[in-house]
Image 1 (cartoon, one colour):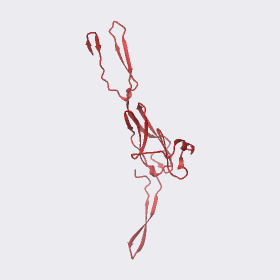
Image 2: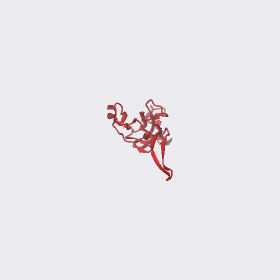
Image 3: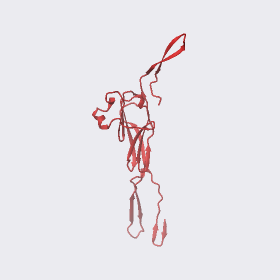
Image 4: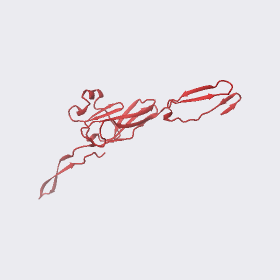
Length: 194
């Protein structure tokens, strides 16, 4: 606080946090003779979005099987609000294979139109994976962007369990005198390598 002739100045050095958004700072001047004077300002704190991803449907994340449906939500805290939300799997941006409206008309989007393929539906903060297959295993991340920058969630690991797959036989030539031998190779690991 400084005094210069008939003027008193008080300075406040303050670094606001996210939790200070919307709070009010007030300055009250009182000389004991006249009524006090009060000036207030509401804090308008801008910050990069804080993002968290979670599975929202009733599924055990440690027991996801082929054909299951997974719903995720991108929980966002931001000021100002975000202008873009993106979803990534293993660092690659995801795109919808159906619109949310088309998936709703199909009764949730399962089956991929009857051909057994997986369906990815992105509806802003929601990601829906229907008829999942091992190809959808990976690390899922949501990002949200506002004027302050891009916020990213921690990766959410999805490991789809699947049935063993037999690969076509490989022909081996052991020795010309012994003839041809067939060898089968199978992939019998029940979870993805992601």
